[in-house]
Length: 307
Length: 223
Image 1 (cartoon, rainbow over the protein chains, first blue to last red):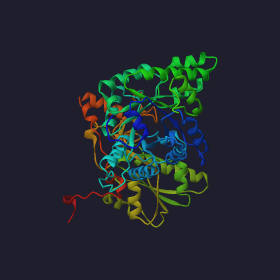
Image 2 (tube, each protein chain N blue to C red):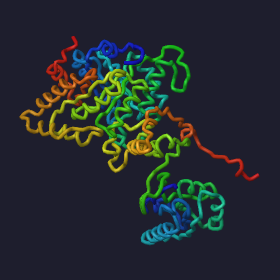
Image 3 (spheres, one colour):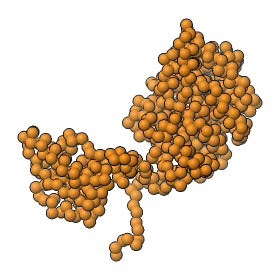
Image 4 (cartoon, rainbow over the protein chains, first blue to last red):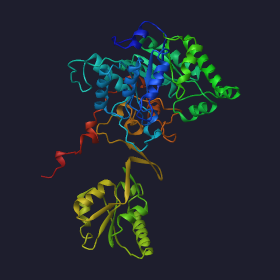
């Protein structure tokens, strides 16, 4: 893993070679942090850091920066997700300074779902910079102590551990690994993947990642999502962009007497397998609307409590 | 060309509700080519408005003129003799540029009859598609001749995003993913390595973000 050391605990664990676990908290569509704090308390002893999504699927939610601070107060290390959909380079840099001042040390740089998917489809988008340019900007602020414009940050530059995402299930497949390389060249130090259901395709992608030595330059955290029901699986298959959910997984859920238990079982099997894949440095578990199941899955997968 | 399409008749009808006599002005440029604001469309709109007003028992008088271009004072001037005292409103079937050129010249109520859509071209008869984002600093030589600024829904300069599947954009399965097209084209040209170069943040001051843009060409300016 390249790049200088930051105060991120996640970075420290990855540098020590620990197999890390991250999870996800989606902030609510209201102004109370109660749910965030409850989920943080639930995940605290089980994960090394928690992603805080940034108005995911372009639906207005409590800000990821504020939610990240609530997590910090609960003793959970946040990974601040930052999309380039809603903020220009001025607002992004301002929020990076603010986030760092509040104790946030990890940032995950993304494009963001298009606003047409959300609850304000008539909104104007920003996309002043793209996700790769955001990675480069966070790195420039840290390593060159400069704002994007080149102006010097005279003191107290924000020193983030920089993350990015990769989707092995999007197209063109052959370019996915090259684009990952671009992200790493821009400064990404850890990578969280899109939810993996098609293990065969993930294996092919990882082989290409290893071939280019990218797993040695950035920590790859494999993304998993437990499927709560046949309906949820179908939704993921049909409505979520850039996702592949194989039919046989859906058939397996259908056949099961208890679909929820089967969903847990599938996720545990996936984690156990992914742990054995060379170059996978950790698991990122995205239990959307089913956060409470995370400890059960991790325990069954043999990823013991952090306490 | 600038591609436009007609506003719904109801909308134009409401815009000139008070007028007794209107000048309906077409444009012989882009909007004639894209069948939105040429002589034929002028005749059709004027007739529809008259008919609708007649049914409402409030007859409307129309004068129809189609200029070579509405974005050029040389042609706009030709309207002078039609813009008489009795004209209560001018209906422009040009793009937004033409509407403004008419409004700048005449102290009259000028209304747009079209919605100006984009800078694009004809794919097939009756089908037009956007091609240029008018960003002010062309990068097509770096993207295989395909513009990611306007053809990618997120204007990504280092694409494709994670929503590209089977060659289509996540926003709409009817839209090709611009970055799939760029990838295919660069592969065809044997220039895939070029795509590994990180495209830096764009200078949007050259686009509309920098305020009103002007082009001056010294040699063309009349002394």
